Each structure stands twice: as C-alpha cells, then as structure tokens.
Image (cartoon, rainbow, N blue to C red; front, side):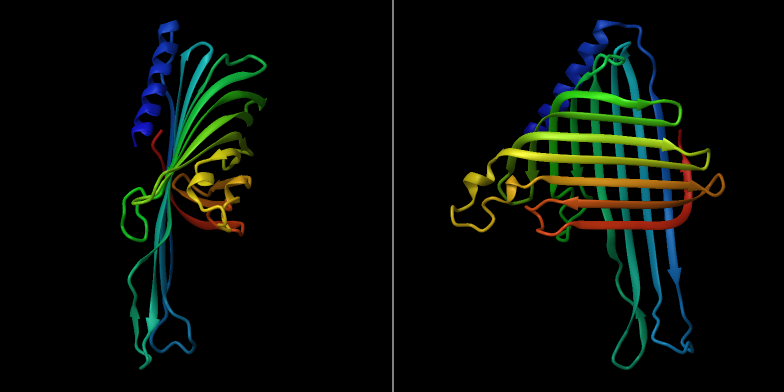
Length: 286
C-alpha cells in the first residue's frame, strides 16, 4: 500500500511540475456515462414447463477527465466500474418455487492515469499508473485482490481525427499483485497498450483497449519451490482485450455489448472471456 501512495504522489508531483512550466493551461474535458441494464423473466405457477424466473441487473460507469497541463503535456484519467447481481428462482423437492439469494455476476474497478508529454511530436514520452480491483471478493474483503501497474516509455498517435483515435504505447512496467493475507507478488517487464475509439455516427460508438505484458523478472521465482509445477507460469505473456459497443436508441435508452478476453497463466491455464449484452437506461453526466 505504501508503494501505491508513493505512485500517486509521484504522479501528482510530475503533474505539478508540468503545470509550473506554463501557467497558460486549459480546463478539464470530462465525460461520464452511467448505465443500468435490467433483465427479468417470470412464469406463473400454472406454466407448463420447467422454466424458472430470473432477475439480473448490471450497473456500468465510464468516466474520463483530461486536461492540458501545458501546451505539450496532456493528463488523461479514466475510471470504469461494472457491478451487477443475479437472482434466480429454485424449485424444492416438492416442486414449490422460491427465490434464492442474489449472487454477484459482475464486479470490476479499473482506474488509469496517464501523463503524455510532447503532444504533437512524432513520439510521446509517457508515465502511467493503473489500478485494477473489485468491490468485494467471495469472503467479503473490500478491494481484494488488486493489481497495480506503473509504467513509463514512448507512445504515438497512430490515427487521430474527428471520428477515430488510435494511441499505442510501449514501455517498461512494474506490477504488484495484492491479495489479503498473502505475500505481495511483484514483477517487471514490458507493457504494450493500445487504445482505440471510433464514432460511427451520433448513435453508434466503439471503444477498445488491448494490454499485453511480458514479465522479465518476478518475485514468484523466489517464493515458489524449485519443483513447483507453477514455477514458470509468470514467464507467460499476459493479455487483456476489451471492446465496448454502444448504440443509443433514444436519449436515455441504450443498447450495450461488452466483450472481454483475458489470459494470465498465474490465474488460469485457460483463456477467460465474458460478454454482457443488454438494453437499459443511460445518463450522461457531462
């Protein structure tokens, strides 16, 4: 946790130095989209069949805030929150239906802060910090587990116009995996991140993020026994790719498709994926 505080302090100090270079700065450009997706199915007791009722809700929030600290330095922040629960009907041995307790179906917090220098140049030096966690784990521990990543390197706008923006960056990264009542695992290596956004029209928009991390060193190499079958898992490349496609039906009703693919051998040998498709209420704060 002390490293987390130090990282935030360093980002704040760097931002402060950038502001000190030129007081002619602009204000914040902010966006915040809030959405609530609800799905429900119910059947009467006289319904002929084995179908059971279900109720599901998912809350999504996507907020960004960016500001030019000086004409050539851009500070970008992004926060993504997804949380949802599902409640299903069950049938006992006598055939009587009742509602089971709600179970968590989605839980994710993603925070990223990026400082991009020499904007407008062919390449842009950057420093970045990301924090990934969830509200609660299965044991009701808050913000557990958590993954912190600090990185620095070079990036470039591959495409930037009124409808499409593609920014890719490559740099050295240091990560910490924090799990309650367990030793912290750290690793260092290279991280490649590409952000893509495209506006098809006023109603349809797509946003995608690809993150690839290759570790060169890890504390797991020292923590695990030499004969452990997991001793080399940290050497595998970690991949995280997500895409969010949103289509506005009306001002307050939106259809959303979220798809995510994850591969991290230290968590699972198999590729993990999930998708969330639904129509629900949406509200733009900014």
